[in-house]
Image 1 (cartoon, one colour):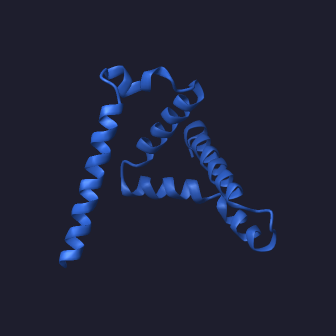
Image 2 (cartoon, rainbow, N blue to C red):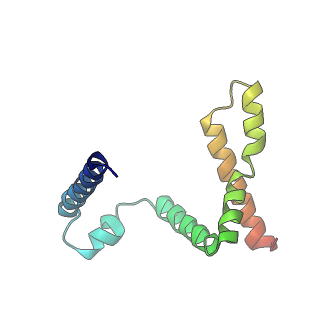
Image 3 (cartoon, one colour):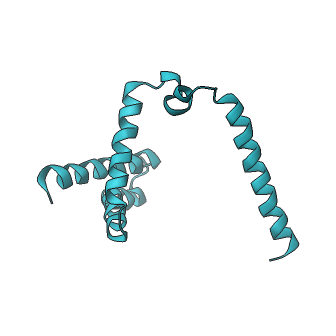
Length: 115
């Protein structure tokens, strides 16, 4: 690696450390502020975060589980991507909603039915 490469890496670490120090001063002094953000999150956001972390930790325990998770997310996007070529109304939000819907359906089938 050249000197420029090492300089870019060092600059990245200095920048990341600077952001960490600046945010640690703003984070507050109590453990409650650190872990639950001063209880300022809405209930639906905290619940969504908990369900998402449950699904990810359940699927990402092995390489096979990781591939199942990626297939569960990407299963619903095939038709959307094909339709995008022919219909101008299909946009990024359609793709995101297809991914979310396919993930929800696959999680329900996985845990509810046992497929």
